[in-house]
Image (tube, rainbow, N blue to C red; front, side, top):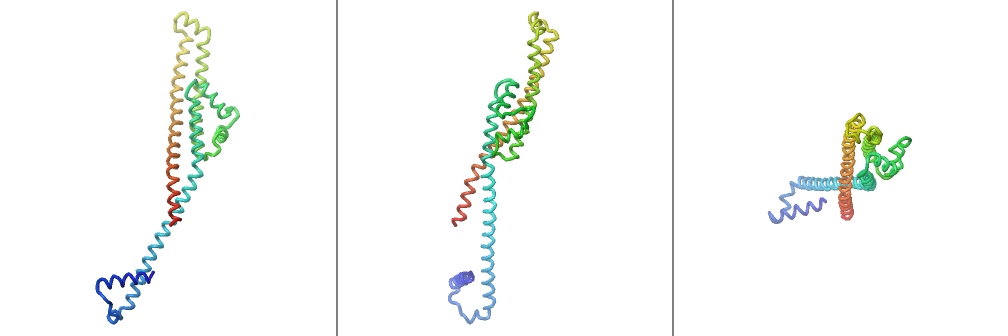
Length: 231
């Protein structure tokens, strides 16, 4: 490195001031040597710092690449599971939704833990993602159960003999009033249920964006690492 710096200095000197008179620079020999050595050390330090910085960057990129490769399959699996669940919930009554989900997840609310069933549906997904999905689905199932209870009460009232008599007589008696109240309750609980379903859709959209981002970053990281080792 010092030899290269000396060559550069001599080249510049010869270009600007012509041949060097050794007798004139002899008193400054020590100073010139020290200057050349200092410049060489500075250049070498700059190169070393640059190489260390690049190595640190490659290490960070390598760890992030490894994390993405580990996480991405589980995210894809979680997105597919949510899409399947949302498809089952798109039509039908709250009773139908509950039955469809219980069949999909082989879930018996009286004895099974929802987290265990979701783990069986998404064995590759990371714990954090699975827990986020569990919280949203628990809310959906809770509201669907309440709506189904009101639905059962409503059907019991409208299928009863007193309600049929009031319909035939075209009067609003106790049974029809109870049926109207039950219908109002169902409508309210369905509104809350749809809001919970919307949360599941938003979670799906968030996970889809993460999948898209990771799928874009992964080849970029690989290209940077390959270029580093090629050079």
